Length: 187
Image 1 (spheres, rainbow, N blue to C red):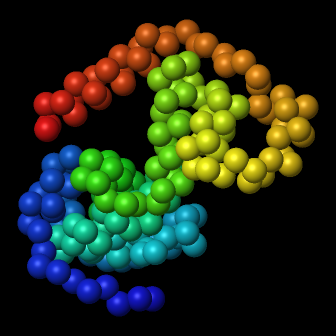
Image 2: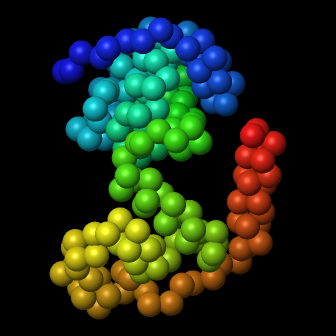
Image 3: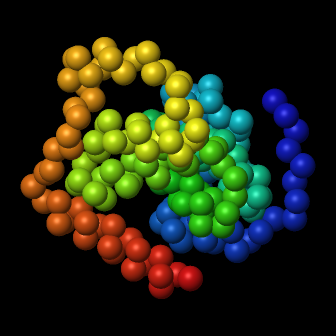
């Protein structure tokens, strides 16, 4: 485990994460249950419990530039295992949004994939896998990675050529509209 060089804590960061997540972070006493139950720990630079502690210490730059906030699968295992009923997954989600909003690097591939996924949902009301992968591959410049998997996936119907439009697409569009309006008020 690497040693983290702590800077002077940012109390405003702590308050912002608490406000946006609706969680009282001082209730976390570092039991480690969130880290023990996390299926994505192998991909993190810091375990979830350490991210929680870094937030408590106001270590904004370390938290917002970490891999952990971008690699979180939002499965909520951490939240389920928390003896203090802290919705840890919500805290990580807020940190991911703050990371993007404040221009921290994060994990480039995860950011690109998230953008492509949200674009697909915005356009079609749901994910269109083939379009999602095409956008991701072009934006990430990983055009030939896993290309050998495409024929089998196409034959099995796992990558439909045309997107399926869903009922309630207008309601989904409304979610994106409200989010954009909310971001405009925060700036």
